[in-house]
Image (cartoon, rainbow, N blue to C red; front, side, top):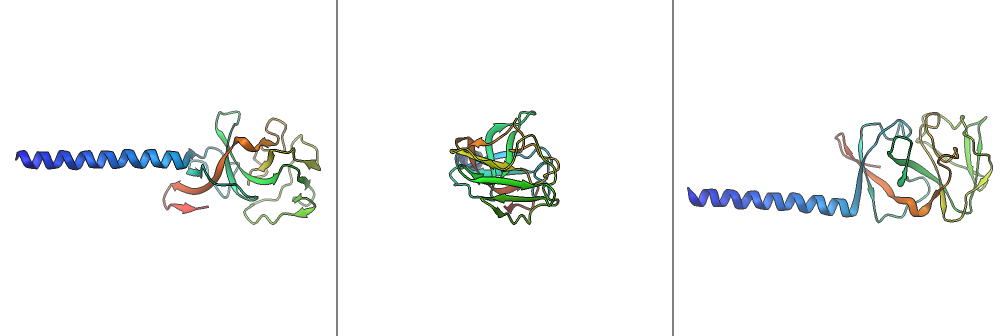
Length: 172
C-alpha cells in the first residue's frame, strides 16, 4: 500500500511539473488573449482565445496584438495595413484601401471600408509606426481615428498565429 501511494504521489508531482512547464513555456513564447469585441469579425469572433507569437515579425496583412489598449482596457487586436513611410488612402465610395497607390486585396472582409473616422487621407504613416484596421470596418475603432492613430511599431507584441478556444484549434 505504501509503495502504491508513493507511486501515485510521484506521478502526480510529475504531472504538476509538466503542467507548470507548459504554462511557463507557453507564456514566454506566446501571448494568449481573450478576443473581446466585434472589430475583427468575421475572422475572429468575440469570446475566442487567441495567441500572438512574441518573437514573430509581423508582415502586412497579419493580425497583430498590440500593447495599446482600447477604451475598455482590452489590448488592440487589428490587421496590419501599412508600415512607417508608406502612404495609405481609403476610397470610401468604393470601399477600397490603397497602400502606396496599390489597392489591397482583402478577401477576409465581410464589408468594404465605407465608413471613415476623423483621420484625413491620404496619410503617410510616420516612421517607426504602423497603420492598423479591424476586419469589421463598420464597427472598428482603429488607425482611422485619432484616439488610436498610427501605433508605434515597438508597441506590437507580435502576429496572432493561432485560435486556441473554442475548439477546433486553428492557425490564422
